[in-house]
Length: 289
Image (tube, rainbow, N blue to C red; front, side, top):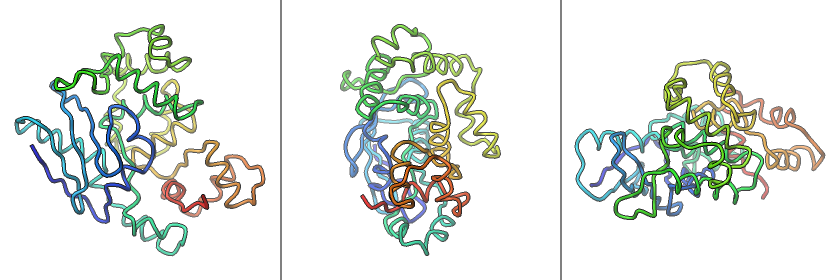
């Protein structure tokens, strides 16, 4: 099976793949030019998608035969993951006079790689908090390896677990076997709420909510704080927030304040003029290093 999915130009497959570290987290594989992803379709079939750039779009390949409904699901999933239908022309227009963002439109930058579901993105975001990147990769790999459905052609590779699969676990297993530590109760509660229908996470992907209300709903999720909510809003296409971590503080300190100690307020102020696009302006700013 092969699909060719167009994107609104400008588009760069490598720029999306490299937009942040998600491509390094299971069940992704490959590199910036050719990704793989083990996907569990809604009906339960587990497949491996092979993803690569194809002009102004993405080429999707997978082994086997697929029904029309499955092809439609795959196309919609990849469109979401790569933001193929996003219109960023207003951002490019705003950035056109800023040398530090000159490479954004020229390099097809602006889209941020997403997981197929907001559930997966929330879990992964929680697993980035208060830790180093290597630990995040190990925790995600543990969660996928313990609870994900196997790929029939290669059972060692697994899809990201469903909410029901994680909800059926317990805090001790998540703490000890998956090595999630203090994050275990948050991940378990999230999975249980989604699996029980008490929280419609996927509905938030297309919800016509003002950003403050969307932020409020995300912050109500256990384990989601100011940094995590800003990251999730960026993934949802709401760019008026900046995910402020130690790296952001360091970069803005050196880039705007001569290395002086700063706090989150100074990061926000540095990009305030970008308004609804300040998150993207920060994300794709051409920093000195």
